[in-house]
Image 1 (cartoon, one colour):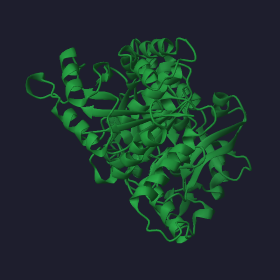
Image 2 (cartoon, helix red, strand yellow):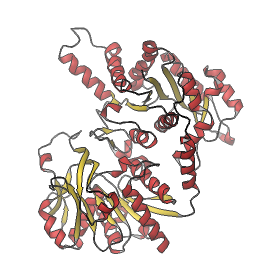
Image 3 (cartoon, helix red, strand yellow):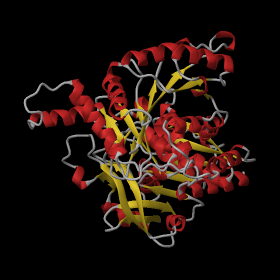
Image 4 (cartoon, rainbow, N blue to C red):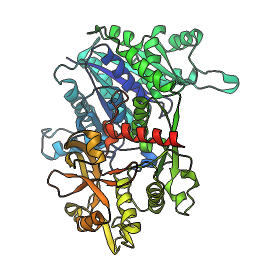
Amino acid sequence: MSKYIFVSGGVCSSLGKGIAAATIGNLLEGSGLTVNSVKIDPYINVDAGTMNPIQHGEVYVTDDGAETDLDLGNYARFTNSDLSRDNSITTGQVYQEVIRKEREGRFLGRTVQVIPHITDEIKQRIQRIGEREDLDVTIVEIGGTVGDIESVPFIEAARQFIHDFGKPHVLYIHLTLVPTVSMGELKTKPTQHSVKELLEIGIQPDILLCRCEVPLNESLKHKISLFTNVEEEAVISANNVANTIYEIPMSFEKQGLDTIIMKKLDLKPKTHNKAIREWEKMINGYIKADSLIKIGIVGKYVELHDSYKSVFEALVHGGIANKVRVEIIKIDSEKLETGNTEALDEIDGILVPGGFGQRGIEGMICAVQYARTREKPYFGICLGMQMMVIEYARNVAGLNGAHSTECEPNSPHPVISLLEEQENVKTMGGTMRLGANDSKLTKGTKIFEIYGKEKISERHRHRYEFANHYREPLIAAGLTISGTTMDGELVESVEWQNHPWGVGVQFHPEFKSRPDAPHPIFYRFIEECKKNAKKK
């Protein structure tokens, strides 16, 4: 049977539980074990699809069309976890299912309660992953903070696993904060109180990951161990790394975290390969790269870094493969609406990512025109591709007033319009074109050259499409349609002719990129930006 690792957090949110859980998976896979990961989100939303990216971060989409928390993206980048909608659990999903069963009379007239009915539903969903064939470890990240009222049923369900399966089948890892106060002093009291809160619920953590600015010294580890009943060797320093999150596996491995976990779960390494050393070599090559390129991200959610998390990481992956460091320059598209494009002058390439709504659209179009007319590498994703179409329609094809019906319903030239099957959709959650879809690429185009094959599969998340009525006028004006759906009905990618690198795709390639396997489009985009930097 699968072993279960529960990762919880204390003191405050956003300490990095997702990265910690993903790193644990990375280290265990490096020992030849098979892992899978589950994210629990205590919010009442059924999924992340209707949440504001500035408040919640990006929505990560799985092949089967689930709109999930961004931490699933961390799992995908650090591990080989087979992720689907089952890997994302929310309060909304749990209560919705329990209420459905109650309405069907499945509880035989009993009073429906948090314990056992809600906790049993949570456990069943976790075990659905854990019972997959040949799975050694299931890593369960419990979102939120211990002590939050929303997290109580999930923490209780986690506690019950030790009752149901016993040691050494269940392990509890708690991530907590060791803050720095005046004069650089590290304080352990928040960690002590956080563990006390967990103990009151009935869970004794086996391992502590102490989030801190600098590594803990032995004296502090001893103190934390003394007041939390956690073995001193299991008090791990989760300190800041210097350059990139991909250094974290090496930091944890040097402290023996993987060895401690396997010892406590009575697991033995299946291989003695040098996976972590290969990972270290790859990341050090990136850190020590001689050249630096600057990529301008022109978007409407730039206030929060996590809003474009997968895009930023995919660009770094492209940098790793090209042996260049990547600096992300965030550019608020609203600030370009005045026509002042100085912010674009010093960057080596422009990327416009996905998004929804009218705000900042004209600034994106301005950035597209800048890239096209000044022959600067441009990459448009989803909304970014649609901006390419609108800008080309207005400024090359002469279709004055061309726009998307999402932003201007009365546009005289709606070159981007609502999908036909979306016209009567009233509910917003889970109703877009979602998940993996096959596309057909046109030979002789840049995107065909990038993929090296005619048929590809990529993930989608959108409601609006290139309007077929405008295909011929735009092709006649010189726009290249380089990819469509397999039946040819929907446009999937466009390109600029006689331009060094201008590519737009309707899908989201960033979701399938990893540091050790960069997505080919991001690899080629960074490669072209590198050439542009050398020209300058």
